Length: 409
Image (cartoon, rainbow, N blue to C red; front, side, top):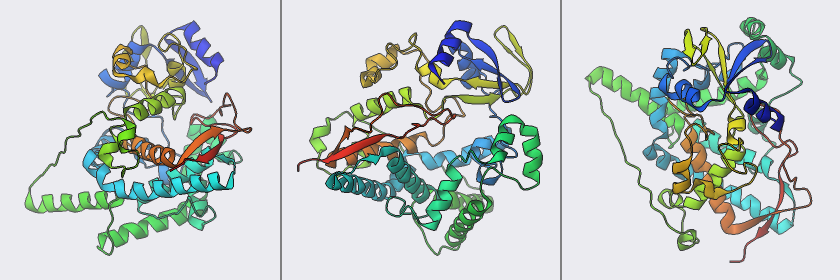
């Protein structure tokens, strides 16, 4: 959202009526009302806007499910992101992050400027494919592989696709077209990736291969459920997570274990401040499941609610000097002073981002390994301040260009 949009919210108060395409929407900024929506009365606002008609792999993804179906799937998937399961996937993350730091060293030795957006996108694609879907893409080394090309098609918005505009302007018509087989995703990419994932699942079910990734954990759950039905037994495993504070320098050259990574308190603060300034999504959306009294406002069933995360994060009433990068805002004493609902990079409440811990882990590991071998510097192509795109998914319009300089051993 633009600075003008932020000023508009501060001027006109806690609930604003706006249009998204042709859909009337309530933009809610009052912190008490946000707490009601996301936490206290979350069962009323548990659903997101329908993705029916979007087609492709995301139409039936967790992000698109509703009510009881969402609750059931969420309860199955949530244990996959527990401490124990993240530790199990850590070796896979280690492999991808090693390749990431090697690429940075190559840029440093060639004295070549590079777009960190593109490199980070390749790293994210590699970790998600490896850890979640059991596919080795080698995305950091081979950008032109067939699989990489198809994955990029699925995760890249094509503004030449007329169906995208139909979906945004007229969801009802989009649902009709979706029933006829139209999609915002290229059919060749959907078919290619689906076949590979289905093949992986088939081999795992036949016990022809095994690795510590998301698919393996889901198959283990599937088999466990069958065992429970046969034996009428139920088991649960919990593992507590412990964190201690330790200075970066004490293990600068040691192996970066899962436990050591969680001791880097200043890195946590720097990442959180980055997420405050540049949240992954500029807003959240919710749908009202039944008639609701939102403070002085009667909100009918089916109404759309928007929560402007970017504007809240950049509101000087909640954050002094919001355009300045100050990691110390997330010191324990400072966090204790912060008002609830003013830091929402992954949402809040029962429908917050289920992959939050995985995303933070892959980010922390990549940054830690990178900074051990190179120093990242501004260059003549670095844009200050960054020009941001206008999509709901926040992005740097012209990329983030930097140079890498090899650190002395």
